[in-house]
Amino acid sequence: MTKPTDATISYITRYNELVAQGLNFQEIMEQLVAQFGEEHRPALEKIVLALS
Image (cartoon, rainbow, N blue to C red; front, side, top):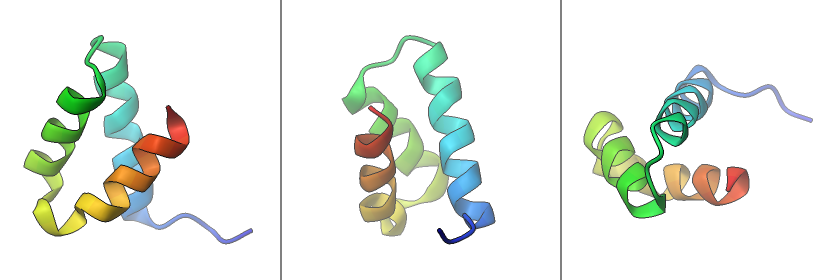
C-alpha cells in the first residue's frame, strides 16, 4: 500500500468536516472544488466516491 500524499490527507480531512456538517454529495464536491481547485476534481471525485 502506498503512503497517502499530504494533498490526499487534506482532501479526506476536509471531506470528513463537510460530512459532519450534513452536506450531500453535490454540496461536498462543490465545497472541495472551491477550496482545492477545478484541476483537482478527478482526484476529489475518486476520494469522495471511495469514502461514501
